[in-house]
Amino acid sequence: MSEHHSKITDTPYKSATTVSLLRTKTVMQQIKANVDRDIKNTLHTIDTEEFLETIIPAIPTINRSLQALIKDGTYDGTRWKGFPKEPPSSEKPLYNPLAAISNAIVSTMSEAQVRTKIIYVDRHNIPPLSLEDDMAATRPDGAGAHPGADFEELEKRLKVQDNISSRTRSSAEKNKEAQKECAREKQRLLDLYQLWWMCIHVVYEIKVKKTEMERYSAVKQLAAYMHQVLIEQLDRRFVLGFVLLFDELTLVLFDRSGVTMTKKAINIHKKPKIFIRIMTGLSSMSPAQLGWDTSMEIYRPISNDVKPSYTIADKFEGVYGKGRYNIHWLIDVEQGDEVEKYVAVSMISAIRSAEICGRATVVYEVVKFDEKDDPKETYALKRYWRPIRSGNSDLYPSEGKIYEIIDEGQEDDTLKHAIVYHDIKVDDQVDSTFELIRRGMVAERYERPVKPLPASRAETDADAELRADRRDVPEDSPTPTADPSILTPLDRHHMNILMPM
Image (cartoon, rainbow, N blue to C red):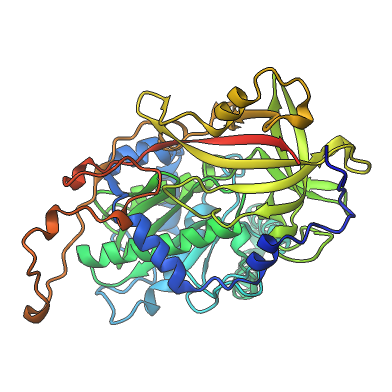
């Protein structure tokens, strides 16, 4: 039994691991190296129509949205407003138009259709804010994020103004000017909006050239930003995003089994309804469908309330200070037929939290939530993604199962290696990459484009293509063969293990 019963107001453990992690600088070169390693043999493609039908919901009012966007000039029947007719020399002319059009599309949805509020912001020159002072200042071209209170208040004012306009025809010009002022204020708020990594729902990258090599490069760059999202968002299971090559859009899914992308790009000008379907579909998805882990939220001890992390960003009230190691997560743990809540006093380890094709292990020091003011015992709660063979069988015995075998006959919970273990559930379904996240979609290995080498650097090793590079393969993957097509992603189940400390 632990002699130290932690509570929210105690001084946290100062283990060497924790201190060193808080002091470690996460540089973009390291992130890119990790992404390059993970993406080489895990990047797969999925039929575009299958991806849309499986992942992105279609609201029933897409035609009505299109007519509204034509009426207000956002779409002229052939092109979206603000987009150049020819590919520009740089990406700069595409940043603002894409964010503005995306917001205009979302604004055509009814309040009942929106399940997750998303605003799109251009952030190509301003890095999102991090909880860690020494985090690398990476910046995606743009993101769809949770709006702050200022935006919610402005939306209310816009709706009131719309109601006034519809009722008072005699003051149409006055109402029109008021609407313009609201639009100017909305743009001002967008410019001032502080984007936190913790608040990002969707991330995207823009390029100009429409080549396969450029698409591959953009997906790799986007994967680096998605990797950063998983570093910051410990309650994120997977991340959705897209790359836009001038006017051709590719959807990307980044989960614990690898990276998947739509096989064929979508021309947003020629296929406006599909573009509308994507942008409205993302807002019509629940937080769980967007990749959030709804089995955990943030407990704020000062306010004594519980909030989803993306709604509060840095206002998480960690009693030990800033940083993700000081967030007090409230986490569901299944014990038989009951679900008991545990609150994190501190975090023990999160060094692998952003890992794909791996376990992405995170370990918390927790106490029972209903005992938080006077805890009787402290526990270690380990959450990770375990590999599963096809057919839903273990690749090898799970860690929890091994502990169960070791602890057989032991009745004292404090002497067991594990008190309880279980697959985490989201929306009452086992959280798995193949079944819940990808929903049975069949992926094909992506054939990477080959950039021609100068003659002086041409390949001289005739057997090079037959060798399997171990650096390309996840640590717990089966041993590869000379045939790279054999290297397929592994299904993974999200798991809790509650252990005594």
